[in-house]
Image (cartoon, rainbow, N blue to C red; front, side, top):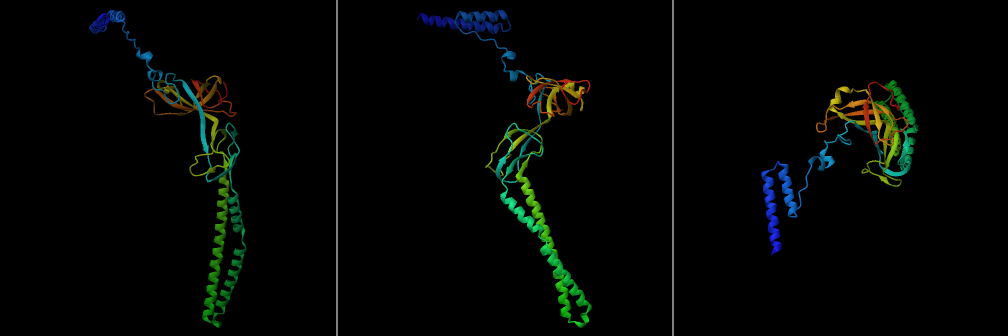
Length: 324
């Protein structure tokens, strides 16, 4: 019985505190009194919520541009100028792959080889057929002889039967057409040989750019079919592209071709000079920024890609991208 009285008393005090708080919503003293009443009744005191501090950081901050922090509009991102998924233009079984992840490759370097035994045999047959000129020469000789017979028959036609002259003329025409057909067959054989050489060239996979191998998808012995997207991935890191999202207020201060100081994040550090290549004409209203693309020379591959960095707009041109 005594416990129920305590419960009733606590509920009454809590109700009284809520009424007092509702009557004096904007009064700090009333709120303090309500909290004291809750403590007296052993009820939890509501925690003060600060929307600015309690909200998650990704929601409290402005909408960030892709890959960067909109709260730090001078941030930038160093990326490869190209990322190429190297593949073969024909299907086949991979015989060998000559590079692996992390290797440096040059443009035109062989990175993989598909089996080509059957194609080499077909190319040899096509070459032999294309170089076979005996049938063409024999047809030319026969056509020349029958043409001479035709002319001679027409000259002495008055002494020959009409059907003999017509036969000579018909044989000469047939010989000319046979010679043309054999010449055309030889030309087709030459084209087939060129086609077989192109197929053989496709079996040899070369890198279209100079850069660094970042991924090796397939291995020797696997079949490169129509569903295979690529064999290796090569990232071109000379030059590098620097993606920047700058405040819209800086739009009038930058122009294509201007030098910009690039400061990579630790532990790389240092200062480099890049040039503005592209200024976006479509802005990001949510973050109040606009995008720029800078070109940063990297001939010795000393600067890695995938780094965050910061920028400083330079007032004068300071060189060709070497460390300042």
